[in-house]
Length: 503
Length: 121
Image (tube, rainbow over all chains, first blue to last red; front, side):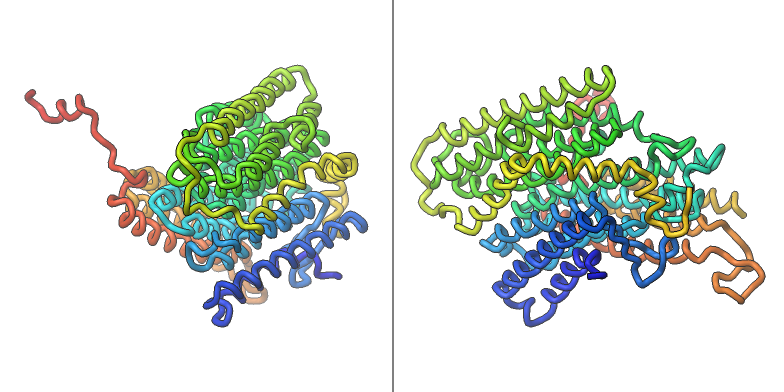
């Protein structure tokens, strides 16, 4: 299948477009059916792509038959196919949850969801940096509309901040791109990686400006320290399936940082080698610290989950700052784990807040749950996974990150912060869980419905990944190591993608 | 020509950033619009400024880079859609929150400041 690489972009586009047209657009049930079919196809095609990349190596897809670097190329390598598989799985699980009733709050939920997945997959797959911008905009405009899905004051207020920030971010992205195109004369990422080593003097300074502007933009998406203020409020106010889908958005930012600052401005960039590292180190450390403080101060489960997203973002940025194969491998493992676990927590927080009446997800004494055992069990597993306690994948991920530190200074800064972050998460979860499950007054809310079977299935699907990632930990880490090796090997990740280019 | 062009882009960017940092959603939207104009001009210049140069082969002696023109076209379309969305969202926020401040609440002036501006007390 020659066109397999583009399926993860085309499938959501087609399904999203079909759902906007009359026979489907009028009836929510047929929209739900087609959304499930669409995300299922997406999951299958990304799994097949993942398998094929594993068996046959990098899949290079020249759009319209225009050869890179002149045309836009989609590159399905081990890193991008892993991320596409992750987003396909996440989309399927969240869509299962959404069709149980969360999609009724506003119009066009399913098409927008599909378009956002299309943007995310495109951003993972593209090998052209302007195309990356376009896919960023696709995923952003879908996310703007999804954020205010179901309406309400809170959502409008946080959406206004989110939209304005991201519009400024898009402008900076274009400024950065303009500078890089002006200095390098190409937009193909592999070609840029080859050409950037030849820059010197004033041109190199100019290119550095452009590259660091890109770091600001990706940092905004990844919730890096000075640009993280939008995240807790946005994620806490979004409706559950949207917040769960947003769990992968910060990873898109981190992924782009890896693409740009490991492959293009990495070891082989001449004067511009590793330009992001001196900035990434302190910012990553501070991001973890601020996330930790936020986790302590969270008044409710959704805000707590949002702050955990910031902590995980900080940990991933620290991996990008260490900038070795071991660190990249740890980041890939940890990204998969933390995306699925935080998505699961956002969905679970929604079920909980529906069963508690006015108290919603806040950590205050309130009515007991309708299904205390089921919810408690799911909460315990998710908490263990997110804190990083031994039997689950969070532990393996954090150990991999800790092992990746190289020098004494790196160890001295990163170990205490990651461990204190875990401790803070543990304390916040114990405190929150105690209040949520054990401190009750009044009786069970009469109009509260138990969680629907399909909602439980969706959360179970997200939950079961964590033990699976431990059981097959050996195979998965071997895979992430190969992927990291590919990313750090400029021969494979740049020269190999351009027929005719030689070192 | 380059100096004038760079000055104009810089001025637009400075005005855009200043307005985007204001508290009212209307001036923020205007600021974002100015910023996107500046970006479009900037992208256009990334292919170098040339006179009497066509982007089509066989039309003139000198050629200009056609790629920035394609990029600008894409950026204009995207920027336009985003501005439209921001305008609608700002109107919605004005209706939902009761004022046009980006934080949703009007900032309260501290007491001592009020007294100072009040004058003689």
